[in-house]
Length: 343
Image (tube, rainbow, N blue to C red):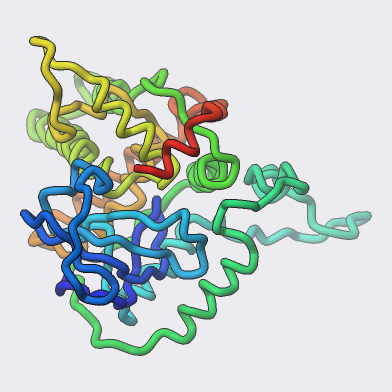
């Protein structure tokens, strides 16, 4: 991605989806200042920039149509240029989380199609029709403004994404992703950490789900490589790609309170987050994985193998969904939201 300028519009990942955003400030790697909206260098308290992206070029963005309380610093890995190809990717990500419409055959004595559990109560918003949307930045007017901004976006040259692919995500996992988004961004709840079943637990269970005679030596090595690769990607991308704005303060407290065996402090990159976070965050990684691989140097054969392995893993997660995904979310402490705004 080419370097973005102050005032430029782009697309930014927030969870598994892309949203239109505007660049308000830029912090160059190694600099003690930021470039503000006037193009001037301004001194900044580096503590306001998340530690895991402080040493690289990062951007302070405003999500179009959202309240300013959602403005945040992000790495360039969270951003994509605003062009036709990435707008198409944005639509594909939205579509990938929508359960397909089921064709209902009318039967005698039935005046309307029966409702499924998915469309009757698939999200907390539907289950709580009177829930407020205050302070969410995702009200109906925000969504309308966001849709209009996409329609009015100027056309730009397309970038080549050689390794683009689409994952087949089971409908129940899509529902979990949508619920997860609403619990955190709308209801301001958090997943308790460490998770009851962590990412490490899930990956070890997946490896153990194959009998001793099911795989040959080559397949066994590929499975181990796949699981270790997912774990590595998870630890590297959690703070930069996988957290919602409301979760950042929880994440910050997590690594600030962690201590090394000799009583010292960890760098965020040295903490094994796969031993702390669980299925919801792992699922967020799998959803954005195609976009991470799209511009990689992997050959088509390797990409095809990877796609097949991810989809098999998604089937496994779907079969174990009652075990691996939280049944409930916890309300954040009274002081959490106020202190979290400072992060």
